[in-house]
Image (cartoon, rainbow, N blue to C red; front, side):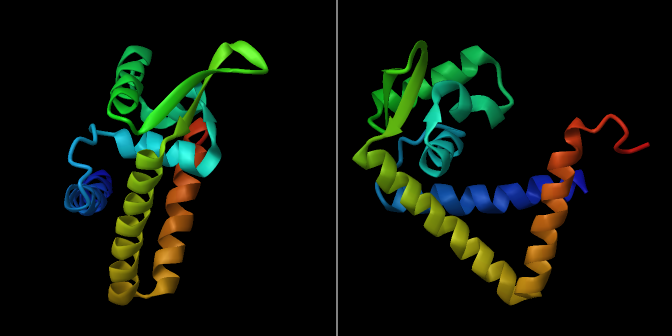
Length: 141
C-alpha cells in the first residue's frame, strides 16, 4: 500500500507540475502548491498553512519565504494577535492555485473514467479514514 500511495502521489504531482509549467509558473518550489492550497482552501495563519507539510519549522519557513519572494504569497502580522503571522495569496498565487485545482480535477476525472466515480469516492473515504486514524493509539493493534 505505501508504494501505491507514493506512486499515486507522483501521478498528481507530475500533472500539477506540468500544468504549472505550461501556464508560466515554472518557479514553483517543491511542495509550494501544498501551501498555496492550504491558504486558498482555508485562509491561514502561517502556522496553519505549513502544519501538514511534515517538515521542520525552518524548512517550512524557507518554503514560505520562497513563495513570498516569488510573488505567490503575502505575509503580514495578524491584526488580532501580533505574535501570529497571516499569509494571503497574491493574484499570481490565486492563478497558480487555480491551475493546480484544474490539474487535480483532470487526474480525478481520468481516474473516475477508469474505475468509476463510486470507486473514487470509496478510495477517498478510505484514505481519509487512514489519515484521521493516525492519532489513534490503538490503530493497527
